[in-house]
Length: 529
Image (cartoon, rainbow, N blue to C red):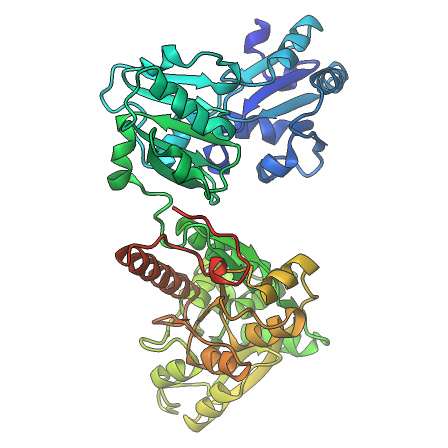
């Protein structure tokens, strides 16, 4: 078998130069992700590509290097690791073979007789244009990519008959534009400059070669950036899809437990937002487990007719007790199971239990009571209901079920305690208007966030899951801007996206540049179109 066809595990040492793409972590190739999952050492600029470490093993060694690190130093350490029999992944910006600075590192591996592989990445030349709504080559005869740092004479490039993409030129964008015009390119030629492409910081200025100076004057463009020259830029007005997302670039605070926040954060990202999860509640076992132990025993021995779950955390607590006793979902056989809402029902389904009862209207204790049948001694052999709940749960459900003739065992399945305060930068952003929106999914998240971090700034959009949460927010002096049309986290995120889309549309209709809420506070940096 040739060395090129051997797997990394079979090699004595191996270096993979992996293209990390232009910025969006989801543009990493499958081959790149696979190599990261098997890496012993990862060499990267952690500030730029640290999020890609999620593909790695927990015990991976990380070599963090700055963008201007000396190549010979990086090469030496990389080669040393490889010669020690380790699999090394060197993450590179964009594509390692496309205007990359790692050519000398690759040559050093070859010289040292260290096996290596070059994994192509998605280059900014195509990806950034696509994310900016500019088709790279819309039926034109030429697609030309140049590195401004290596160009002394722009005259040959003024003759480009298609799309001209310029790397590393944002600092000299205006002189480059003038040079292209001086060499014969019409000053009416469309041009776009995009910085931080494919990330939620992406920003694009559309102009012409003749107006590039005044249009870029207050834009604050920095590298990484690409300049696109040609008629393809005109398509952006119709094809822009990334920067026009409803919550594009919005920094959204998600004050929930880590487990609860995951799905919500993913939904927010689909709207273009940058979610930041700040735990406000920590879920812990009950102080004394005996009550739950008796409840599980009673569940198995037929003490209950119903089990009512009012949260996904309650499902999790019961499931963990089942596992402790070697039980599974079959223990629910013969029982009727109720769920207060969609998220709780989903947790039960994942456990292998399909709820028999759910509210058809409001997803709350009141909504569940509205559907709950009264106790009938002729139809119901047992009149007891098990309610595994939080230690701070309200008595609404117990009182309502008692009124319907049921006997309730109200059992503390878990405790909710206030989480530790977030780091100082997060607290400052909350109070200083650094967040564009905050999502409150319960009254306790309002109380706990204000308690551990302070009140959100008045420019921050306050979105709440329902009327009770809105009431609590208002009691703390917060202005409620958005309320979900039904009490679910998914509906709350969708409501915020709808709000963001309307704000964006209103700004455009008024002839203004859409701005995020955080950009409206005093002293915020503004970009002028």
